[in-house]
Image 1 (cartoon, rainbow, N blue to C red):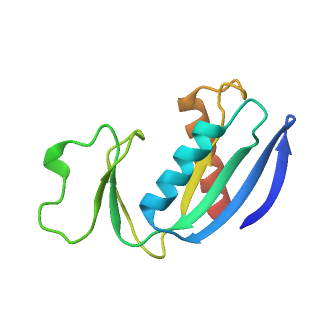
Image 2 (cartoon, rainbow, N blue to C red; image 1 turned 90 degrees about the vertical axis):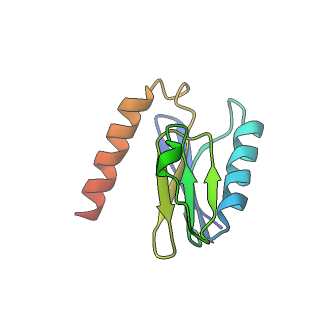
Length: 121
């Protein structure tokens, strides 16, 4: 469900509340969005919740993988290491064109983390 939009520097941002979604479904939706986007596609922020799942970023060491679990372990192309997602945990997926925003990834992550920390204080 699309919740609305906000505009910064003529770059609109659309917010979507996905509710509880299967992790692989959400991953496929993000991949499709990214593949189809063009220079006019508004940036989006999606909010979702998942059933228990481990997502593994490109820096996940095989020794970190759980060995005896019924919880799915999904390899992704995102940065970082292994992350556990579960009901009650809000996932915030940021689908931004950083080149269009003339922003470097580390700067963007730092700024977004600061915004989120200030929002929950």
